[in-house]
Structure formats: structure tokens, C-alpha cells
Length: 308
Image 1 (spheres, rainbow, N blue to C red):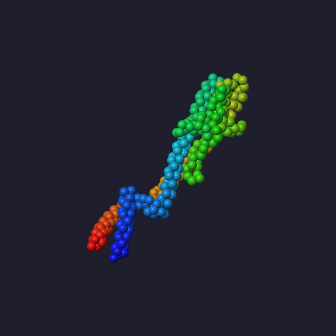
Image 2: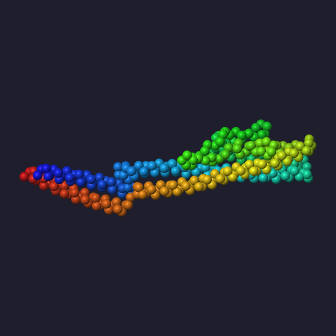
């Protein structure tokens, strides 16, 4: 009789422990809205959820980087559009200066306007990005170009801009160095920078034809050729910026799709059927209460038998 009673006690206690554990688990699910509230609930699902959380964190950072890179490329495109506008204006002035009806005074006035264009080009080349760094300074955060005491302009940046990671083992150059954009322009007489092309033409027009009319004519022709080459050079740079912008658009769509797929998988692993869980919790609590009542009655009977 004592062995049977002890067995009944142990079985009831084990059942109540199981029911209490189930009730706690179900209560956590109902409260949190998550099926996997701890690794012990479903070790495989928990491990997968941890991996998904890590992936989601990485992809969120990549998406943020894509937004940053897109903004930087947008700024670069706006600046380069401004450069193209200045080059076009300089080319128009150079063509006007080549007209035989122009006198030295007229050409000198054009030279002054060209010097103002150099100033505008320098301002554009020294544009700052949304982070406050130099847009075309490469790896340097300071000004990309400086004006020397003799009036010439030199590149003051360093190297190429650091690439921005936009995916696993994938990065993109969100800007270009000013050295690549504004220098190395070859119109047939050797590579020159954009500032030198415009400044040299401006200086020749301001000097006039008195010293050597043929030299002035050559300087104007060389200036026109240089500006044409510069226009093509900047157009190529803008095309590169546009291509990278299109690539970022595709990458943004890819990351959004991955995020959606991760969320669907996470919901499938972690999501809980609230109505079903509440019903199961209520049933579990009723069973637990009934088991506790039976255990209490069994305890009373056992004590009575012992006293008797």
C-alpha cells in the first residue's frame, strides 16, 4: 500500500511539473508573441533565428551604406553637371574669341570672364559631401584642390576614396578622386588639368595679340581643343557615376528582397498562433488545476490512512 501511494505521489508530482513547465512556456509565447522564447524550446529553430538576426543586421548596414553611396554619387553628379556647364560656357567664349572681328580689348574681357570660370570650377572641385568631407579629395578629408601663389591650381587630396561595402565581399566607389576627374585631360598636346586649360587661355587673351598674333591664334585653338577634350573627359566621369548609381538601385532592390525573405522565414520559425496558444494555455491550466486537486485529495487520504 505504501509503495503504491508513493508511486502515485511521484507520478502526480511529475505530471504537475510537466504541466507547470508547459504553462510557463505557453504564457511566454502569449506574452512575447514568439514561439521560440528560449533555445531549449526548439534548438534548431533557435540557431536558425540567431543566424537570421545576424544576416538582418548585416543587410541593414549594407542598405544604409547603399543609401549613403547613392547620396554621394548624386552629389558628385550634380557637381559634375556644374563643371560641364562651366566648360560649355568657356568653350562658347573661346569660340567668340576666335572670331576675327574681336579686338584685343574684347578678348581681354573674355579672358577676365574665363578667370571667373576658373574660380567657379575650383569651387565645384572643392565641394563637400553630406558627411562634411571633400567630395573629390580621395582618401583625404581636406580640400581637394588649392590655388598656388602663382595662380595655378594643384591637387591636394590623397589616393582614392575608400570603397563602401554594400554586400558580402562587395563594395563600391561612391566618389572619384579629383585627380582622376580634373587632371590628365589630353587634347593632343599632352595631359593637362582643367584649371590650366582655362587659365592658359584666359592669360593669352588678356595678353593680347601685340607680342605675337600667330601665337595668340594658336593659344585660342589649343584652348578650344582642350575644352572639347575636357567636355568628353567629364562626360565620361558622369557616365561612370550614373552606371554606379544604377548598380546601387539594383543592390537596394536585392537587399529589400532579402530582408523580406528573412522576415518571412523568421515569422515561420518564430511566429505563434495566438488563438491556438491561448486555448492550449487555458486547457493546460485546467488540467494542472485538476491534477493539483487530485493530488491534494490523495495526500489527505494517505494522511488519514497513516493516522488510522
